[in-house]
Image 1 (cartoon, one colour):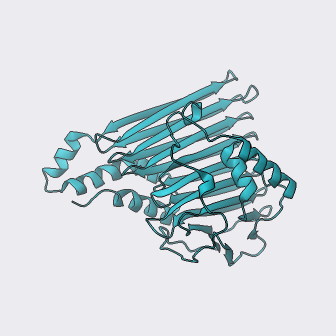
Image 2 (spheres, one colour):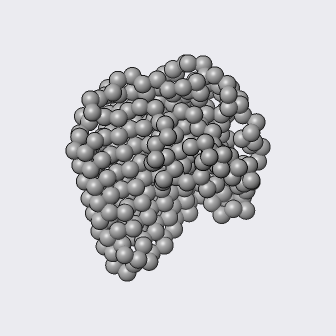
Image 3 (spheres, helix red, strand yellow):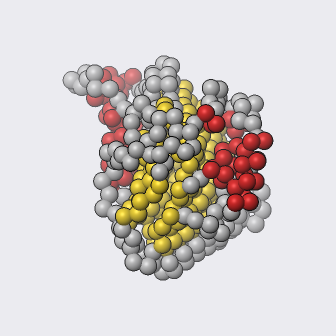
Length: 390
């Protein structure tokens, strides 16, 4: 472990920050960001700011810069601090500036393992709090759903103050073994002065199912990678993303659907709303390997533009090496329909109420994809709360 950390640290120091000349960073400028300017040794405050979610959890964990606290563990389930587990780094290698930084510096992580055939009826929940102004928080998560198991895991990343200026670096590795089902929820609601970088990757086995919800409401600027590899016949993956940016926020999602086995299916749907001078980037790639016949893959990104200064870039892509597949994609960015706005306001609604109603309608099909009621309600409320009342 020490050797691999040293290697990651050396790699991190050698690699330069990405620039807009790098294809995947073309629309995300990191000017003014220096990861080494953030403290890595400061103790966390221990604060637990109010959560977006009202969850009745089977087991919970609370994390900040000082450590991790486990509260309740279901019988037979591994839900413990992450140590020198052999799975660390197997899916997310330390091969770029930010994954190398995480691999070198992470102190606190969580290992979740659901044994073969076990069904956990209530969700497992972890809350990560960035609580040091000028601090860096490195977080690592490994989830293993063994053969035939079923679990819901919820991860919420927050700041303990809306003015907190910080740097967060997250790595998540998800293993969904044959015939297992993992429902994974990742909610990011950091302060708008926080630089946030995340690399999430999942491996889905034969006849296994991954249902993933990603919510993005906070942070200043950064990038989130979401990568799935379907490496067992009959594997399915569904990723539902919802985000809202305002002020001068910039959100960047980079998604990758790799079909490495036949008869696999993936469905990625991301919707975002932007107001003020905010910007967003979504880049999606579907890759179908030569032996992955009978693949069925879909990706879409839709953006609702609520001001003349907001802007969104969508870059869908296909890389198909098999000949018996069905792969489609769609991307749109459009302003609020003036006729819809006039219709609502002509019936006595304020502009804010009218926009809230339109935003709810825009996101409704995304909300309908979220199975867990508390998560669906929290995402809907977070989206609507960003529209001013006046």
